[in-house]
Image 1: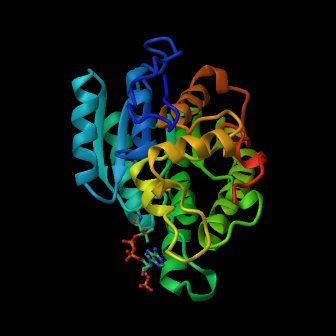
Image 2: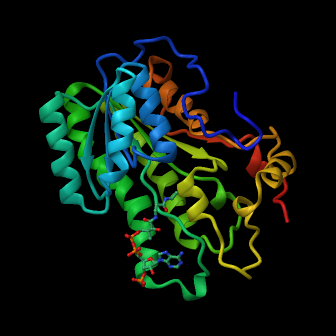
Length: 286
Ligand code: COA
């Protein structure tokens, strides 16, 4: 079970899915070696998929690969910057050549940080929009011919909920994720004839190390720094700010990805699934 702060033991929640559910499938998870991406990689591998984890930083992948292998999972790692369309195409073609197919693409790689819009540098804006939005498009476009040729596939992109209302100091990320939502709906319709299901997940607050780093606002910004609070205060925030009363865990998100990758997702496309304990619907904590 998760504790009040969300829990950090990624494998502590027993899978509700039957063993072997994803046997024979190949799944590519960008940003798959850490945080939510790691939780997704672990669950898909646990269910029998061969998981290819991609990251800009190979160091992020080694421990994850060893962990999945030690549990008997099939896993490989590829170094990849999703902002570079040629690199993306070469990596995706290499995976298809080596493993014969790509059934699932999880566009999980993201970059976020709090910064005031008035002084956000062009390169800072570009970095986040390129990772979150362009990267999602480049990876989706690269898997298209492979999925189309094999008769279908699943794309699950990572959105967020902050753009459902105004969220100060997140102009770059909220704009990019609104684009991810639009892209999800458009590709879902455009690629349905090829039986490529395109959906998105919108995770709520999950205190992984990367999220803590990305969502720590500058001092004196007036934006509440919930992650910097001690665990007791985090538990208090969970009780007040999250209707279901606890932080999320990577496994909470991974479960939805596994569902969408399974036959249960056969008739689902163009949907954006909010997985946040009801947080965005509740009044924002001040
Ligand atoms: N506030 C303002 N600007 C920032 C910033 C911050 N906290 N962090 C980075 N930037 C700016 C940099 O100053 C740079 O702009 P400049 O050239 O005008 O100075 C630009 O963003 C790119 O930074 P850089 O570190 O060179 O980019 P990168 O490509 O190596 O990293 C990021 C990408 C910027 C998204 C980085 O935050 C990152 O890798 N984050 C880790 C992953 C992550 O955020 N995960 C999200 C979990 S929700």
